[in-house]
Image (cartoon, rainbow, N blue to C red):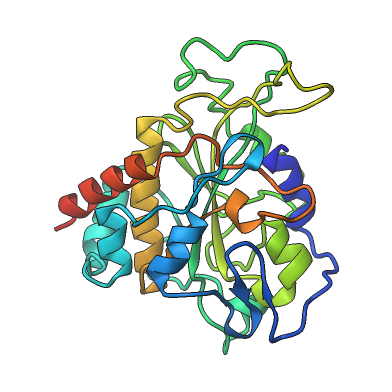
Length: 291
């Protein structure tokens, strides 16, 4: 399902049937009382980074995290210095609203609630090519990399943009919602956990077109490009992960939209064809750059 269209509904305030405060919900066992998934940061990431396969089918959890993420989430890698990260963002022309402002807090910005803990990776699932082939040079195609559809003129600010940040296939980054603004972009947040989850997740949409799978009757957007992400996207996604963690004051736990919503009605299948090892290589490169 197209992430953009789903976000239009999920960004808006809507009722949720909130389980009891002691409940544990979702594939990765979100503990409502703790406003956290179960386990240590590494254990949470192992579940939340389980490969999202065709039509949203999950693979097996990684036996262990790649060494870059493992070092980060086990506490062996410290956050880089804020000034170094700020200089790097500035030199590469990336605006995330600065590093000195706070990130969002859970419970719709309750000052007593935890700061955002999760870095959620999405894919836009657009533009949609139906039965047509993908462009020959998918990473450089102007239509694929056009941010305009995600920022409609006159759009309702309670609905769009649907994420905090957008990342195209050339590595360009565009700020959507302020990182300090509590936002929801998954069904688990909006339809299961409800208001307590609003502000606990920071959302990044990566541009990825889709096509129809002709083997399936009716409309679908099941076909994603392979590889799913460009090299530039992995590079900038790693930098964004570092920068948002620095702004939050601690390493965020990376997660995927499809894994978070696993098992829910009309759950999404994004990000498709995401390579955890490619992301980890980019992360290790960026951390070396920031030493």
